[in-house]
Length: 245
Image (cartoon, rainbow, N blue to C red; front, side):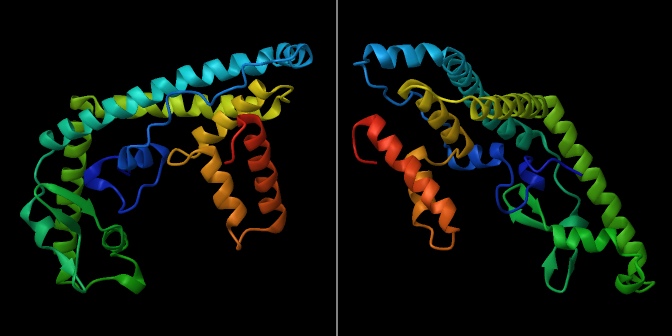
């Protein structure tokens, strides 16, 4: 199955963190949220107790910066792969069923209609079998599609887009594991709490933590306990920042 990140084989809507970042340009805020500079001795001791959490926060920022670099590089390489991708055979552009085409798009950029693709793959099923006259045509379309798909994969490999996507996935997995460690580590200071806020922002690439909490709190379709938790976190964030969220 082709990677959903390849523009020619992508689903209509973003399906992964990488897709969302590339589609929206939400590469994450660069500066960490402000931490109160006046720290009382008791708070200073609490921050010392958060040494492990603060170290994870620094690790998060460094890995997040690397993720942003990979997204920018991935966009460049995706564009290069598109230039190298072979044109689909004419039969792929003309084949249709029930007024639906297998490939959708123009100007050399095509997306697969996966409903049509699934029908083609299941053409020999009893309930979905074409007539004998259609079977050779369906086989020809499938062969042409497979050749075009493999050509796209080769373009991604030669351009470096596939390697960049793999590197992005590794960094994302590492950050996800780090966020799990952050979630399991209690915060004892405002600085420690802010590390958790930053981890929350990473989990929602197109929103700030304040926006995420506000939307969740105001979602009347959400369970009351979830809305209450979001409200409490929003207020805690407001207290720590010293301004209204």
